[in-house]
Image (cartoon, rainbow, N blue to C red; front, side):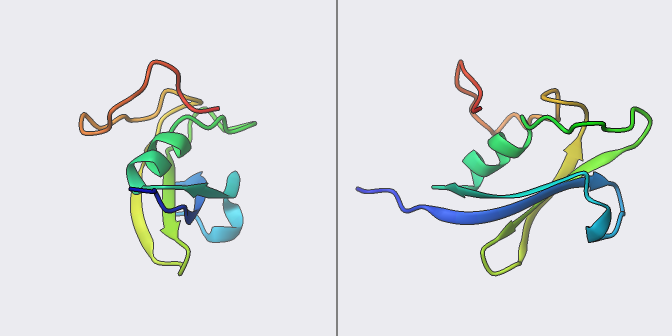
Length: 91
């Protein structure tokens, strides 16, 4: 079976912040939600304020929010036990 590529958008911002206050935003072309979560949780946020609670928002290509979760610090974000991590995180 051939996998289908799906477009997701993500943003990392202080918890409860407006869209315009995002520290990092982008688009991601990947085959599934689990892979998208894994990718956004390993991103580095440049100049992230140390005292701020950051959160990740993941939306599908239609703009519907499909996942929101905590982002702790550059690459050390919350990793749910249900996500299988490979030996090498995505770059």
